[in-house]
Every structure is written in structure tokens, then in C-alpha cells.
Image (tube, rainbow, N blue to C red; front, side, top):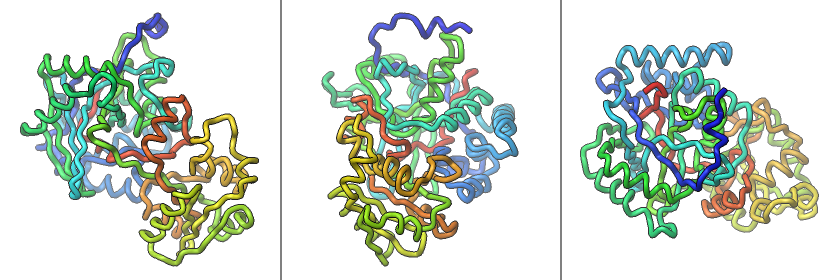
Length: 432
């Protein structure tokens, strides 16, 4: 295999964002653009959310990003055949010329987020251009890599952030381009059932593209959402000759100095641990208080407790149990000391190192733990399945960014940045 392109001496480089010919749904061939979109693959609550999306439209993108079949090989083959068929039938069509895409999300409460979708050069970790902040699960990277190989496509962009108010004086060129572009008629506009309004514009002017590319070359990015897809891009880049299409991956870049993201927690569902057993095991190790209140009030109590130290909310038995004030000796005995204090005091660190590994003795594997973004869905599934939902309080973005710059990754699935890009608005086929 020719890997010479990956081993050459590297001059300092910044983010390299490249235009591409987007693959998009033909609105005349589908029921509605909203009906063919999906949340990112790892946010879809299975099986209920998956089946809901499948029934929304026969061409929903979920049939590509989460195909259903008896074996992994059959699933990936099915996704590849579905993509081939949709392209042949004109359901998905390629834009005529390469461009970068300005993407806007707007909710009903006045929140507006805008960024640029393009294909980014997949950099090596030692370049410190794209900073991860979470560990990844190898089986998920392998699964995504198999799907991307089979389809020869990037089916959904991952979400990267950068700070446009950096030492170079600010991302005025990119910000100005985004604002000017957003005043024009979009190539796509739709409102998804979660109430978000989505608009997309294609930018193809060579001078504008060059100006954005030059400015972004002075920045590094933080992975906000899509650690497994970035790890997948890196694996596939290493497998294929360079230069070639696998040197790049589909991303959405958002300037959080201008458009701050929301940071939410990702909750855990312990399949085999009833709430009574989880609470009993905490005796003498944490303070536990039962809360017979609605979910919003319980989450308020969690936020208040989390401001003073590590805190969690257990659900699944019809009530909530606020868990806080861990025994300092327990933490000293169970939390690794070879990381910064900011890492050692994270709720996710204490959850995994102390509670899961030592108190509850639950292996971090799909058979034992599910990761769920939606709070109410976590509670509902815990109550229905007889397990324990562990509800988390979100981490501040500055903590995430500071740890990432130190090269320290957080426990996997520690944060959920949003709003996330809807899947299905623009795809990248590697043969275009």
C-alpha cells in the first residue's frame, strides 16, 4: 500500500477546508425534506426512534446511517445498495460544482447557529489541529469504518468548533461571508419535527472560498460531536493511498466566539442494576436523598448539588435519588492521580472510576450500559426496563477546551454539544 503521502516531513499547517460537490435529496422525489432527515446516528434512541424515522419516509437517511439487517456485513451491504439505488433513481443528486455550504439552525426561542460545511484534511494527532476531548470505543470506530468503506461516502458531518476571536484578530472574513450568504435565498430550507428550522446555502465563488480557506488555516478546532467519526476518518486515511479522497472528511465548523454551542450531558442507563441495588451499594460512600418531584425539579436539584461537587441523579423506580458528597477517601482510592485536577473532579471521571468500576462493578460495554442524550427518554427506559438511569449535569465548554489543549481526554460520552447538524441535508460521495 502506498502510504508515502502520510510519512513525509510536515511543514506547520492549519485547518485545510476544501469545497466538495454535495449530494443532496431532490425535493421533488421525497415526501418532504424534513421527513428524510435524522439526528446523528448516535443520538437516535433505538429501537423506537429508529422505527419512527424509518416510517417517516421510505428514503429517510436513517436507512443509510443505521441500516437494519441480520449481520454487520449485511447491514453495510444494504446501506451501500440503498445509496447506489437512490443515486441511480435521482433521489439523491450531486450539486453541479464544488462549494462550501453555509448551514443555519434556528429554534423557536431565538437561538441561531451558523457554520460552514466542507471536507477537512484529516490531520495527525501530533499536529494538534483537531483536538479530541473524549475517548472512543473501538467497536464503534470499527463499525463506522465498515459502513464508510462499504458506501464510499461520508453520510453525515461531524461538528467541530473553533474560536474566531483568536490572536489573528478574529474570523472577520468567514463571519462576514456567512452573514452575507444568509441574506440570500437558500438552496434548502426545512423545519424538522423538533422545531428547528434548517437552511443551507452553497458558496462557489473562488475568491470567497480562497478567503475562507486562508483564514481557517490559522486555527485549530475542537471536536464537539463526532469523536468516533473523526477516529474513523483517521483509520480510513491510513488504509488508503495518499493523495486521495480518504485524506479528507465531512465536517461542520462553527465559530463558538460568535455562535456559542449549548453543552448538555449524556446520561447512562445501567441495564442490569435495579435502582434499589444501586442505592444500597452507596451506603456510607455517598449521600443519597430521595426526591418525589417531577423531572424538571429533580434536574434543578442536581444542578444545585453539582455546583458544590460531584453529583448524580438516579432514576428508574418512579422517584429520583440525588447522589452527592462522595467520601473523600473513596475518591482518593479510586480516581487516578496522573491527570490534572480538572479531570479528576469531573462527574464523568467519578462515575466511571469510582461508581461503575468500584462501587457498582458494571463493565463499560454495550451489554451493560447504554448512553442516551435525552433526559426524559433515559428515565422512561429505566422505568420500563427495570434498570437504573444515571442522569448527569453538563460540563462547561471552557473546561472541555482546556483539557483538550493539554492533551487530556475525558471519559467517553462525557458531553453533548448542540445543536447538532441534522443528518440528510448534505452528504459526500467519495467518487464525486
